[in-house]
Amino acid sequence: MKKAKEIALRVALSYVLLGTLWVILSDYFSVILAHEKLNLYIYFQRFKGWFFIFVTGVILYLLVFRRTKDVIESNEQLKRKERQLYIQHEHYHSLFKHNPDGVFELDLQGKIMAVNPEAESLLEASYKELEDINLGEFLSEDDVKTVTEHFIQTLTGRGSMFETSIHLAGKNSKILRCSFIPIIISEEVTGVFVIARDITQFRKNEEMMIASEKMSVIGQLAAAVAHEIRNPLTSLKGFIQLMQATGSVNHDHLDIMHSEVERIDLISGEMLILGKQQDLHYQPENIGSILRQVIVLMEAQANIDNVSIHYKPYEIDPLYVMAEANQLKQVCINIIKNAVEAIPHGQNGKVSISLNRQDGEALVIVADNGIGMDPERIETIGEPFYSTKEKGTGLGLAICKKIIEKHQGKIVFHSEKQKGTVVEISLPLIEEK
Image (tube, rainbow, N blue to C red):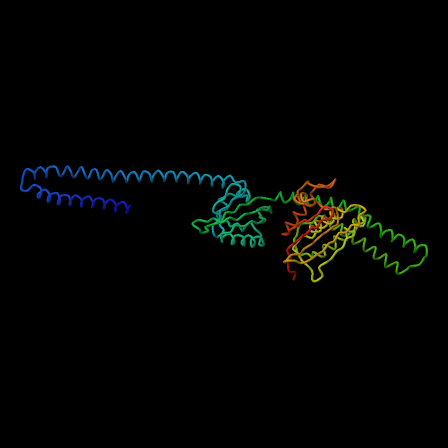
């Protein structure tokens, strides 16, 4: 309003100034031109007003036309921009409202500013109920720390992805895969978008698939383990029959019998632990100890297939990883079992297993001198339901890759036809105190 008054005042003053100058100058020149001719002076005075009106009218018309044209064009541009902004707003609103994932808008303090219907469904609460609630109220203490770290990172302008669990009323909990995206306006972070997807059922299906494959592996190992146990049982039976026949006890024989019983107990114990349904609980585990336990089981099948297993441990110090021991055993059994089965019958088979430390990671290498694989096959390793075995499902290696990824590790395959295969498994180390 102040600007409009300034412009109006400027126009009025300009008009008065021009009119004053016109009167003064026209009177002065009319006197000079008339040269004391009264009729000529009167004639000039009569028409100078009309001339002034005509000239100022033309000037005002041009000025008003130009200004009005600029205003109309600016108004039309403004309308077009408003239309574009409206369309963009509707696009983003549609993306926000109809997104199949839950979307939250948070301010810099983590307070919920807006949610879409799917987000309300995830938290089982309406927006009005969430207005004065911080998302941290749905998290456990450990998860609050993790989520806070990702939130602080996002406030620096870098997005992040992670998984967490939320706890709702009635002891109901869900597993969410979340993305934090910074809201940046004029190169300044003003808030955070949270995109969350419920993967609870996906995780359950994944665990069921892992458990199913594990039971399949156990079933295949059972025959080999039974054969392995039969050998010490045969020795025990022979010594017992010898003692019955002689009526005497040989302490050397007792020592052998005791070692055979311990071997049976070790093998059966490992089978029981492997087959037991356990809740996932990640904790520091000695990867070398896990490998030794798996090798005890796998030697049974290796002996039947005339394959020797050679293990080279890392002897400087124990290597600890944050893991679920049963799942790592399942991975090692699958990899070693595949290595044994890749060696043709009648060939002097050899499976080499080594454990090393490299760049802050535990590195497990399993190498065989089997038939190897084509490069095309290596590219498809880990795809479910793709297998080169006659009775294979292709799930074994797919599950192995999934388990290693969940342990923040990597699994890499190298193979050459008729020369063998090398599998490298790397897992991040932790310092065990």
